Length: 322
Image (spheres, helix red, strand yellow):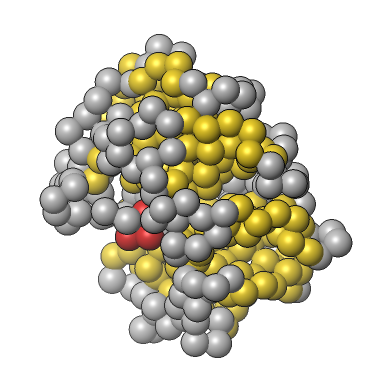
């Protein structure tokens, strides 16, 4: 199973069923006629939602009012990755033709644009908003600097490319989850390799830094969340193995909770759980699973809520997990 199939953390909850009793409906927004939202990105401020739409446009909604704001036409390019910056002031979109665009929010001013050699598998914006990293399918990772606008680093693609990316909280390091089963930590500005974790048995599909930047969480085909020392690449511990593969990770703002989204390796249409792990103890704090709502995006926001989005008919709904 390729990481591209789950479209990075933006769709890490897609295809999973959640129990209505665990969800609180925050907002319902009516979609324009004929619009299908494939997946969403939620601003960590909890104020905006961006939708990657089937008509090759990105639409933005205000969460408080539910009003549709800007619509960005990508001129025929299929959106494959979408993410807000931590402060909500930038929105990045990666396309099926390899183009990456970053816009100012809410003005819509294009701040940066570059074209990678293949479809964008995953992209991330650094916490300070100065860097964007993009992993094209089976090609080298490119790290671009916002000011001045230039490529800051070029990371050699390992076998099968890079499947997931994460910047450290201080924006100094970039972690890559690679198809050769290794997790690598690089200097984000120079591209120098800092450390490598080589003990994972199968491909990692998701990666995230801890709140203090000292450890990295990695998970994927081996069905286990592994905790790695960022300085040495040494595996420190692992959370209990589950029966499904991990396709996405989200860390809560306070660093105490880690959300892991799972998927059935044999049939992605079958339900699989979303587990909320207690980082300190490595135990499951809560499990979200049963037929019901099918999210197409999710994000922890600044006040600690886990927000999810789903589409039902002509409505885009926003839920919070209780």
